[in-house]
Image (cartoon, rainbow, N blue to C red):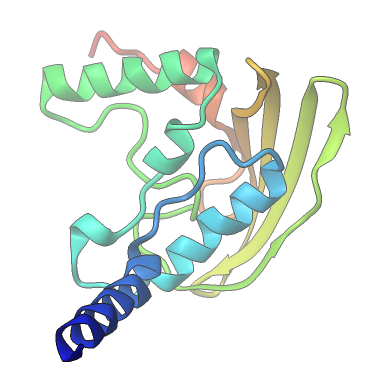
Length: 170
């Protein structure tokens, strides 16, 4: 009986650790809830010294629309080919390369047919930032179609436009 209790206790302890490294549900039907999970993950992992555990804009890339995913792929192909950074040299989610987030406010999704927007306000270090995420419904799911960095260190910029207009022939 003690073996079963020990096993159950060990399983419980392991299960308690898993949420700290849990992945964001890319199929979350509400884009605002999904974005809250993204920013929560960044906030939880701020102090992590394990680079593999730190979130990146690839979380957004995984939920990108077909058109935005093609632009992200083009950028990654450029980076693989050139062994250099191409269009994106910063993380668009946090508007920087390093972060200490505070005052995170993910607004409600504003839905208009098969399109939606979600405004996220936060501070990265002391810089106030505003990102507006545009979503489009594809295959029954809300997919990120663009991110407008309206206020922050890199503002103003539209990520899809920046990726589309970058000179990949360099």
